[in-house]
Amino acid sequence: MVATLSVIWVAYHSIHIGVGIGRSPVQHLVYASLSNPSITPGRRKAGRWSSNQLFCTASLVVNTNTSEGKKRNPVKPGDKSKINSKVSPHRAASAVRLLRIEQGGAFADLLSADCRENAIDDEMDYIQRTLGFRTNPLDARNTRLVTDIVAGVVRWKRYLDYLIFSLYNGATKVKNMEPLLQQILRIGVYEIVKLGMPPYAVVNEWMVRRWMTYLGQEGAIQLMEWNNSPPSFSLRANSGRGVSRDDLVLLLNKLKVPHELSPHMTEFVRLSMGLQNVIQAGLLKEGICAVQDEAAGLVVSVVDPQPGETIIDCCAAPGGKALFMASRLQGQGSIIAIDVNQARLRVLEAAAKVQFLDSVVNACQDDIRSFAAGASIRADKVLLDAPCSGLGVLCKKPDLRWKRTLKDLEQLILLQDELLDAASLLVKPGGILVYSTCSVDPGENNERVESFLTRHPEFIVEAVHKYVPNEFISEEGFFISHPTKHFLDGAFAARLFRVSI
Image (cartoon, rainbow, N blue to C red; front, side, top):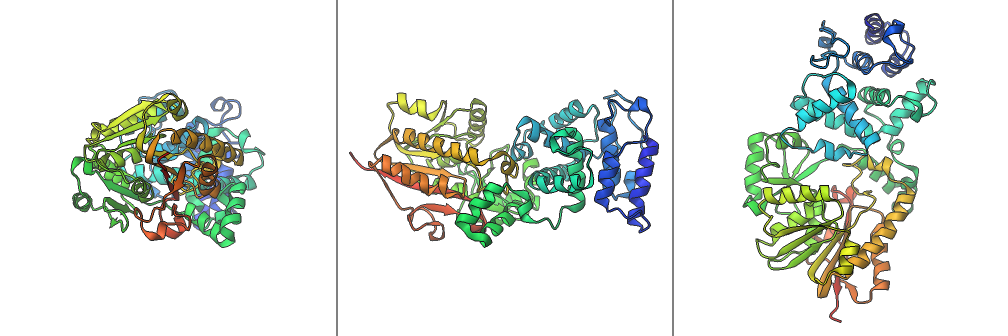
């Protein structure tokens, strides 16, 4: 193995001093990681490299830091108590997260946003169980790097695979490649060529066709470029704990986190960087603020919660909108937060306690369709933030572009109609039903409202002019946030009034 790595290092180094054999850094990474290694047969099993060998190879090929070449004490095979310092901790963590996303169905944003006190320790243990060795702990810089790499690899996965398989024919299909090797190669290639990638390389074809249909070519390209750009985030000051935006700004200044005030929402602050600093400082854990996009906040403005009202949130977990609505009640009234997922409801309940909102938030595990069929309650307002394709948040959730299919969209549309019908049963005469999504697809938005109104003449559209700035209001009176126009998440909301019949 040492001899093999030495050969790889010489080949890589020769490229950077201009006397190489004519291969690019990407070619060296692919050939070094995938070629038949010159190692003793006893060190190789079934023609496959160990995780240690794969990481050492990729680390040497990708890393230009000369400190990586210093002599290290190797870890003996099977000895999990020692640190394998040859492997970059950020690459190990990135590869394991990517495996969890691709094979376990985890979501990239949830893994990156885990702010539990023992989250880092849990992740290091998970790395050991997955790879069979430990790495040095992740520091703050490496944690940020992991978040960036995972999001970038997921976002550019199709293009990265194209580069890899254009140089290597040993596995003609992605599914034939060893999963760990696949992730390591993607990480390495991403670190080398992460700039200058065409936007059309990183999205499913059916999405492009739909965007071209209702946005035109230029609009579709702009949306794809937005989806491939680094995401920015917003923080909402938690008024439930008496924290104002000015208080939050003072804390951000102390942390030296760059920020700007939202021009649309008085509780919100925008961040272009520094979210990990906020998390590590405990501002989320202590309930001082919450991560929430302004578009989601504007949906709450469309609901317009008032003290004393009973509001049902039909698909509430993990609870961002439910908790913001609860803070608007000022301790008077009730939010009935319904969701089919018990684990996500527990997250909502924990957040409600931290934000001092548990006195007005009542969680209920149920499918809103069965709940509505058997419930006698009629609420002042009902929010249906429906399950959707998430096509408005691909910038922050890049893995959705690979998980969503056209068939998924068709099934979601059917589900959205069923949920709207159920939610309508919970609105009292003179009450309000708000239908919202985080999609930019008309098939999930205004078309669903139009279909609903044909089935439910007892509801009419109430334009949202009183609740959100004019720039977000469509001709039909709906709220629409579009990423390339407003530089926020894509979102939609319709306010529907139930006439007194």
